[in-house]
Image (cartoon, rainbow, N blue to C red):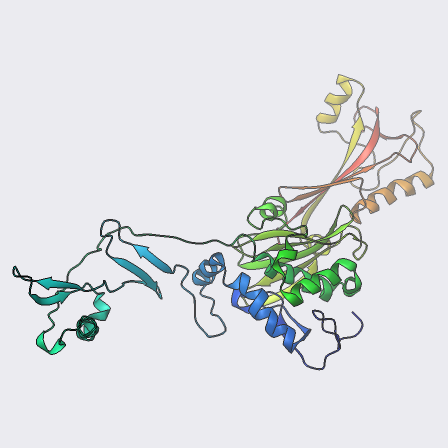
Length: 417
């Protein structure tokens, strides 16, 4: 985005840009941008972020991690009304983590002659001091003179070791607009050209109007499947207390993956055009809410810096059991540990040009330009095939036999991020 005076939400020129948390600060977000106008910032907080921050799962997360909101309070995740399992006349309300019995409607007490001699009701122990006022109010409504009665209280335990039932409503739709905002702001901030993408324009309209129904028309996963933990477990240490965002190209589309720790994992299609990023690029936002830090990096570069060991081996064409057994029995070739000595099928040493082309293939692997790349159990494995080179052979130091090389295999052991 060239003009920093253009609000990325309403797309209008404004002079009142404010600090905007990409990940809401109430969820431990420390990623901030400064190209959202005050009006849009206020609307996002009330209409978009709130769907995510006030989600019941978010309340559990904030309570467990002791993350305060804007008012400095930590929410208690369980709220609402509860029913006593056997006493249908007793109802309870959860208030700030404590179960409180609601006053029961007072019942008139009559003697054998039908004369009203009093009234009774059941209260929570915390309302003990209000018992007199409650009874006076009720008696007055019944047309009785409260001064003709006196209040007597009796404490009785009615719910010790009792299991109460209640309902917990889980939103499975509205919260997605909050995650869409995170993905959009991340993409616009880190890939400025994306701002003019047709889908980016559509998303900004959805966010400006908080049009939740339009979110359903976008390609967004459910948010509850562990699609990220399963597919990226070899890259990341998911035990760390952090939120992760990353942008990458998938099937020529720009995709944002979001993993909010202990909450949601979601993928969002942001564009039909992945050319905003280089091939194999994965831009990461690593928001550590425990250490209150937010860092950004390219996953490929980060993995390269985290490599502990590198192992280079060759794949061979095997035509007999004898050749297979020799390769498996501590096979050593000429030039091993230095520069491999290459031969043709007749046993003649190749000219220097072939050696240079061979070494260039190895360099391609280290630049992640392999034919196949896989990551399993902390190893980045790359296979470089020799389709565009003449048949290349290595000579066994032990037997002098020639073995044709079909590919180079490079295994890089790295530490999880």
